[in-house]
Image (cartoon, rainbow, N blue to C red; front, side):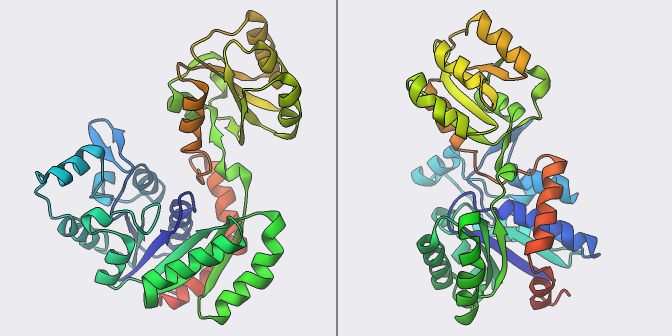
Length: 356
């Protein structure tokens, strides 16, 4: 049985998406795949259970037998951390994680272990990436999100310094078109020359990080004024309408398939947004828009969502999830798999794990 730990240095790097892509590819080749998340900072409620949202999604897509709360045994909720700080917790976190690891690998050819948002996550209970991979001696694949050249090189150097000989290689993700040539012809060859395998360089695909209108409704607890039938429509960009129409209009025109967040009383900005490529108006402060705006939005097929949050509160909520590689729709999952088939060296990755 093999194991592969998938980690990152910063948030929204694409670890869960890569776990899914690898898992589906391996399953298609007849391999039995397990999955677990040693520690999680994302508490997500399903019924009366607190689970990790990513683990639940992977469980469903890969059709795993274990429950989501088994796949992510240690979820660091605020209440648990309070117990850690006041000394009232009586749990052996390492033992819980290790028991899940033993269960996850039963009857499997490989277990994919997904790390937290950074290599620090879980340090407070002894379950950081560095501690887990070194204690279990697990090869580790680092997913590096392209921010700029300096950050990419620094992130990979930091991963190598922390993970040491267990760094199996890297995948550089979310590379914009402007940096593509440099990533392929300069960065990847340089890393290979210093002994760090690059298994893939993946292009930025804006639509993979889009959020649906339905997800926005749930996230913001929004009242739907128009567009109830548009829950599956994707929103690729976010614009904040807090300026004059003259300042906002050029921005609105440049930004396609967007959600515009503005006060419910800013009829001027709402009207301007409706004349550009807008998927949704998010109206803050529980201020009802004019009937004219609602009618025009209905005519154009634009969702109008009314929320009680202030504009900044709504922006913060959306930005906390926008930018993740979100594969909840079959079409997006298929597109991501096609991208991996083109840009990820599956054969080399599996061969090094003695699975090819």
